Image: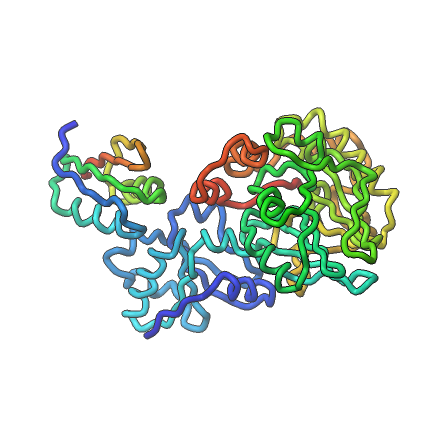
Length: 375
Length: 75
C-alpha cells in the first residue's frame, strides 16, 4: 500500500480537532519517555527503529486496522524506513515530515482576539514544545512578544499582514528556548526590549523594559503597558495590551504557575512570585484575557487551539493562585519541582549573547518539553 | 584496543549508521570489536540503545571534530 507524508501542521490540526491518530514512535525508549507528540485521542506504540531492521512482522498485531497511522522518529529518516516496511506488509501509513525536529519547531498561528481599533492579536502555538509567542498588529505596525528562534515565521507573517515590525519584547530571559527577539530586531530595525534586571550579563544593546513603560503600536494607539511581575526571573515583566489582554510571560499559566528556580534562586524569588500572583495581579481587572508564554499539558488548549483564559477564571480555578498559606506556597514552588529544561544553562547564556551555538546545536539544546511551570 | 573492523558511517543520516553497524556486526564473531565512525549526532544515543538491546557492549565512545567514534564488542 502507500506511504504518505504528514506535515507538522496537519498533525497540529488533529491535536486541535481532537482527532484520533495511532502514533508508532520509532525513537529509542528514553527519548519517547522524555517527550512525545501529545493529543487527547492519540494512541501510541514505541518500538525503536533498530529493533525493526529485520522486519515489522512482529508488531503487525499491535497496529490497529481502523485508525490512521503515523510513524514518527527524530529526524524523518527512520520513520520513512519503517513506514515503507509497513507498507510492504499491506498497510497504509504516514510518516511525519522532518520528524520530532520539525515538530519541535512548528508554530501554528491562532488569532486570539481583536483590538479596539480593528487591530488583531495572534498567538503562535509551538505545539511540540508548549511555547507561546504573540504578535500584536495595528495600523500597519506589529509588535512581537517572546519570539522563538524560528524568526522567518514571524517576519513572513507580519509581511503577509502588511505590517512593519516596530517593537520586539521578551517578558524575561528565557531558560527553555532560544529567543528570536534580538535577531528579528536586527533584521527589521525594530526596538528590542528586555527587562534590565534579567539583562545584567547580556552582551548586546537593548531597550530597558520597566514597569510603567508604555509602547504604542500603530498610529491609533494600541498601548502596551509593562507591569513588573518578578518571580520566575527577577526581571519578569507582564504586559497589558489594549486594556484587554494580559500577557503573563512565565509567571501565570492556565493550569499552573511559573517556577522560580531556573536561574538558581528559588528561595530568593519565591516571595516575589507570591507577591506578583497574589498582590500585583489581584489589582488588575478580572476581565483581562490571560495569554501566557507556555502551556504544559494539552488540556490547556481551547477548542480553537488557542491558550487563553479570563484572569477572573484563573483566580477561581488555578490551584497555584489559591494557596492561602504562604509556607505551603513556598513548598509547592521549591520542592518536588519537575526536571529542569534540557540544556537550560546553555540556553540562558545563548539568550544573553555570551555564546552563539550553530543552528543544529541550538535545535538539539531545545529538544524536549519546556518545563517552566509548577502545578 | 584490538579492533577487528572499522566502519565508516560518516555523512550518513539516521537510520543508515545503525543499519550499517548491524550488518558489519553480523560478520564478526562474539567478543570481537567493531569501531564505528559517524557524524549523525543522533547515533550516540541510538547506538548505545541498539547495542544494549542486541546484547552487545559499548566499550567506549568519543567525539572529536564532530566525528563520533564508538567501540562495540559483539555479544
